Image 1 (spheres, helix red, strand yellow):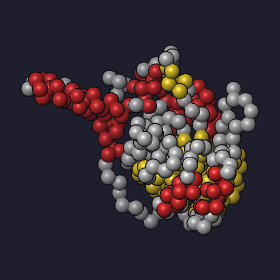
Image 2: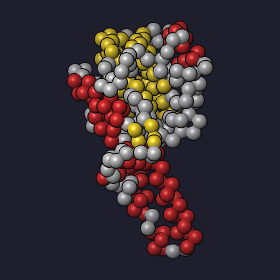
Image 3: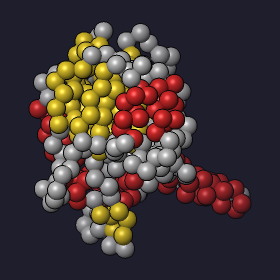
Image 4: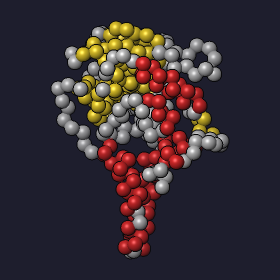
Length: 291
């Protein structure tokens, strides 16, 4: 019931619905336990009982387990990474991301003096880049129309710049690239504290809806999984990954993918994680098929 009807779980009090949706894939472990108990009992009826939750889990997540198709000629490779403002090795992180040879690299939690290290290290392979506040975009293709993206929740006081928009001029045409870092959430005794993130997602959703460029790519640490209803303003407008779980946080023992690659008028064919860097997030690399 929780798998098939997770949207029926109310978000009040404590945003319990969103909290469930963060860990939704892990409910599959309960199915494995049920099968194990059924085998111990040697009961055909007990063995049949877990088939319903198995079907529900397969419907939601089975496609992510399928192997990705061979890369095509009209594809873009992108990397999304929250590099952490406490990263002890920004140069090593930058080199690791560049080694994957993506077309675009989106970074969050860029702070001086590490920002200068990223700029210097990535410059040879990525001659075009833009930074606004603590987020940045590095590209192999020219960038124009760079501007700050206002995703600041009204309650946040002081400077807060965590979004940018730019137009990437690829051989396949113009693509509007958005980079965003939505507010963090906290799990407390009262439930999930996510109101700021949800408000920021709403502002980002309005910006995406107003975007006039046909093809759009969104890269960012959204502090939510794609099943979390807090991202409805985004997932209702954007395509999410068709293949790959790519759990990205925390890096030491990844439990969820909160670093996202989404697209409009394009397909996110496959996502996977790259090896750990000096960040508490794993980098996520996505293969986007352009239409």
